[in-house]
Image (cartoon, rainbow, N blue to C red):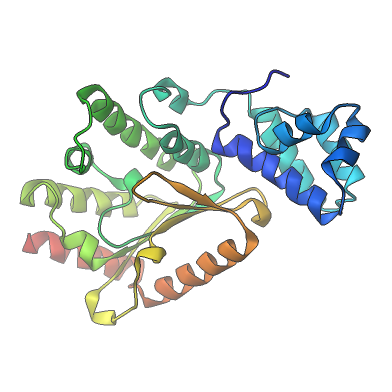
Length: 284
């Protein structure tokens, strides 16, 4: 397989899981290279996601590392076999920053998703006018071509909500995000109406945390938690000024599961949340 100049987050994740497996077994990259009849540099490339791995080689490595987690191994095989297939987001490569494309790929392969937002509506729930307002007010203005591409890409991401096999999506949104009024009253009201419409879809749950609950929030709580085929392949995606951050270390995953549980416990139920959103829309 040819060496990739850059790796996507999904390719890097596959390599990272193989590295974790090797290190847990106390086996060196040199020992692995001997098994495969190659050199340690190629093992490093595999573990960095820059070099693909076949199903036969992956299963051979798992056996060598004495990994008995068959569900994890099967999930990694699915990842390895699917990595060469291009998703819709590839049409934006070279125009939209690669880490943003990685979010679309993460959502596409997720088995369920949980979002927590405080200051704005989650990306896949945004209307075109709301999205345009968000991207048109960056610190450094985007070139027109990139601006339009980012808007189109974000809107296309919402396709994960409408697929026949759509994964469950739960959003916990703070009242502050509902009242920000991005784009003015007309755009803000249309966005809230759209949010209510989406909340009626069978696999979508929208729940609001009102100011009155006095639930504690900090910037570290804003995230998208995407469940993988097995819990070990879950991922937390966070926004940052330089670009998206992806976390998948076991302690991070455990921490964000607790965060979501606590915030969900403070939120209104789905029916109450719809009524609350309607009330906020009337106030705008």
